[in-house]
Image (cartoon, rainbow, N blue to C red; front, side):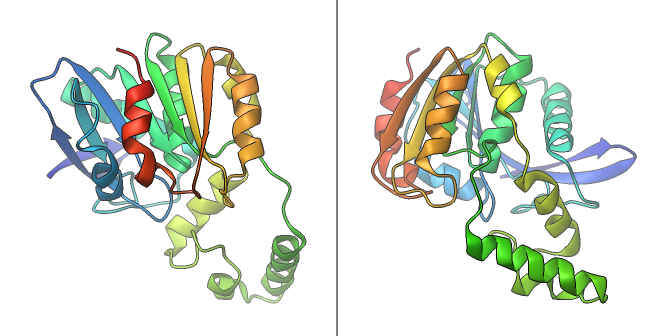
Length: 240
């Protein structure tokens, strides 16, 4: 594991990362989702993709990487681009799970000659259940009376243990609709999805496949973390 400092918008951030297979010419950037860190992704894929140099990164606010203020998705994209520029690392393939997949997609949008691997990623809005809509309504009611500090009791599992900056970040990014972004992606894209995923339903993956013209879609057995059981299959589908 390595730690570096990146100055972004006049603030200094610590970024934790790890590089393996450094003798390989092509580099694969692997990004985690909410409630996770680079160690989970390394657990899944460290033994796969032997022809790639792997770059595992803790996104700001996760793992051992710091965050100072609430971010938007574009801030994550910008800070990763700056990190790559300063380290002089060229990425051939972007991979991301959940929120990390959204960030990978935004990065791949700018680098059209790259490949993109999406794992049950966010960015397609699914209708909220009655239970979720009720929790949101109650929380908004409490905020009127200055009781917003009790947000942990109404937050999703992904957000319930977050500090204030990360909770605001979660709110900033959780309801983003990236249909327009997905429709503009030209990179060769491989989309893998858990059939029983409750966090990002299979219908979102099907829609994503429809929007990204140059894409393959693989529904696989499992939930939101299906890739932990299917890492070898995922790696086998990526050509070159």
